[in-house]
Length: 341
Image (cartoon, rainbow, N blue to C red):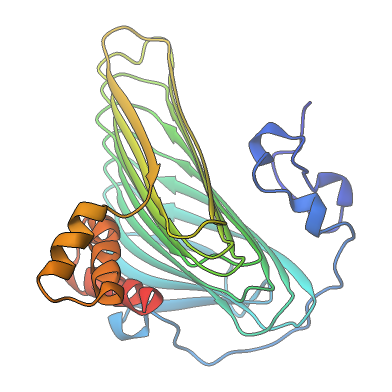
């Protein structure tokens, strides 16, 4: 079955169901059967979760931007890209183009902020990196458990470009963050990390594809998650090494903890390799906390609840610890501690 690559909230025929393989674990059609009413115009004050880190701000409120709906980066920049939803029970969508000129360096601090309930948000980003450019993209979602949040980033790299991404999410009624990377090889480097912390009946889906089309490309990917109560985490990662992409080095790992009887994790890591001279590996584990470590901590006088929290934080912190810039890393670590509390 062929399905439209992009969802259009104005056209219900583009809403996928679980019958579509790529949406097997995230059934949008089950929750969204009609086009939602349009979100109203609104404004928000400057700020957001990354406000303390400075930089320029571009905000989309209910799918509308106050200024230009694109980012063109030259030199070295920090930009806070905010997607804010304020329309109760409404729907909106937007597209944002991001272009890095050759040699540019951009720290993109991207936040998804829900200030209402029951909304549907559908966002698309087209990202292009010029030769030797470097983009570090930090994605932080904070949306209510009644929201449906969809976001897709299509990333195209040039030779020797660097794309680094870390996504942190606490989910929503249904949340899906997609990343699709066209990797040219040619000394380009891709680093895609993700972290999900889910409780109650929240749902989060981190889906990615990386297509290696040329020689000597590197991809490193690590995703970790924790679910409890009746929450559901989904990881789908695909790395494709096309014919002729010799010298590719691609690694993918997904590891999750289920801390309740009714929590669920669905993982689908995939490698497709059509070249010979490559180094590729992937791994996946889903389990519970280490009972031996828990017993050891309790034998040292640490209460069980505190011991569980410390072990869970240590498990997830591997993702935040891979963030390069210290102030960003500390902010994300604080976000994680707060969600685990």
